[in-house]
Image (cartoon, rainbow, N blue to C red; front, top):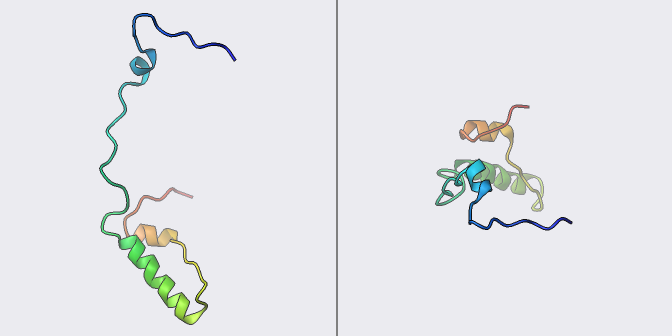
Length: 73
C-alpha cells in the first residue's frame, strides 16, 4: 500500500473539495410515532388471533399513510 503524503502547510484538499459536513440532527426517529403505533396495533391483533410468536413489519402503505419517505418501486 502506498504511503500517504501529508501536507507540510496544513492545507486540507479534502475539505476544500467537499466542504464542511452539515450539522447532525439532534434526534432521530419518526415524528410523533404514528408509524410505530400503527404497526404495533396490527402486531398486537395478530398475536391474539394467530400466534404469540408473530412478527409484524411496517408496510409501504403504513409509511405512506403516516407521511414517511418511501422509495419508488
